[in-house]
Image (tube, rainbow, N blue to C red; front, side):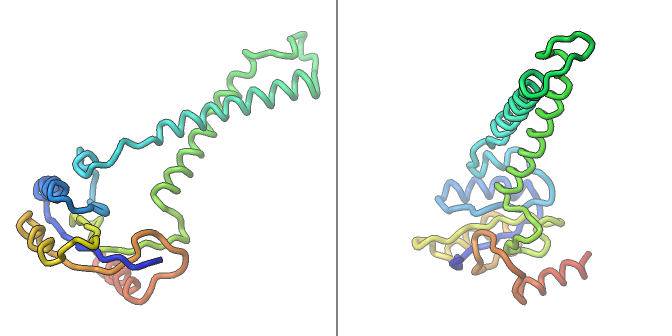
Length: 196
């Protein structure tokens, strides 16, 4: 993957971070991501992120589970292997409702977890660049992607005026990659362990 340049600003408090995110967006800079130690209400709207469609995916997975259960049970018990169970009809829909419900929940739950992991690029074998060692500990980190038009020194000054305590410029891969961490990131991981 190609290396990109990022300007990383660290903030000590969410009350400083929140207005800084709005200022950065108004100034026209591209926010790559914001890392916080706890969820900050309204930060997604301040960053301009669209609403998640995970609930739509969950509905589709649930309907798929219901259809799978109804299709399999009706084909097995009414067509392929019909059994006379206490004189009930072969297509006994009320008796199948618990199984249909369980498959609906199973498909929705597993599908949403896998979709979430895919969208957030979470997996044991995937590596991502760590922009700051304390990004999810006690520091709020805003990462801004530099484009061809971005003046890095102006951006650093802008972040300092917005309340950033630490500002750094990093070259990193924007997405995830397969493999192991390089030596610099291994040192960051070791520092994180020693700090904890």
